[in-house]
Amino acid sequence: MDVPVDGTPIIHSGNKQSPLPWPDISEYAKWSVSSYKFGFGAECLRDGDSATFWHSDGPQPHFITAEFPNKMAIQKISIYLSYPQDDSYTPSTLAIRAGTGPNDLQDTRVVTLDKPDGWITFDVSSELNEDGDGLNPVYAYVLQIIIAANHMSGKDTHVRGLRILGPIDESPNDDGPFAFKAPAYTLYEQLR
Image 1 (cartoon, one colour):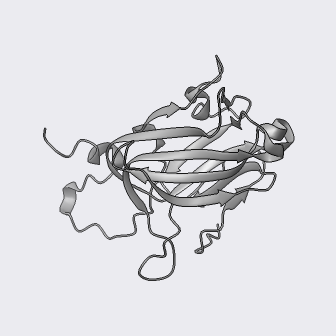
Image 2 (cartoon, helix red, strand yellow; image 1 turned 180 degrees about the vertical axis):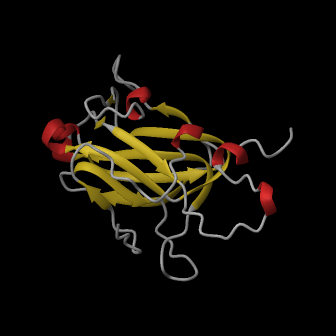
């Protein structure tokens, strides 16, 4: 798969997520949403079924928050939206914020979408790395996706799927025979 280095969103048509080279770190987060209609809560974002969706129920802006137990390197977000199915409920502008807690979130990226249909994958940061061949990951405990506007000035929103992706680890293994670097191990690497 060709991966753009300028932060341009990658669009996958259809309701199946294409295999991506970035590790999915979504399962390590505690998920919450600003509001939801009964039966259409945050669990619908992660159930893997494109027929279900999170349906907000309140004033704009709407937001999705992922809180991690440790500081995580976050490279990309992959979100499933369907303008043909959801019409004015489809987000058109997303703002991404990250920080160490809910009270110190900083804007990292704004993405504008035009009638999306399928999985859209984009970088969380807009800052080039030191080699100039990609974008830096964001290191944060909390990531927040804000739906700032919908198509046709819609009020509530639908999001059919969401994944948070970490950076590709390209460093050689110099830690000896017992290098436990998978996210499942690194979550518990510190004693408390």
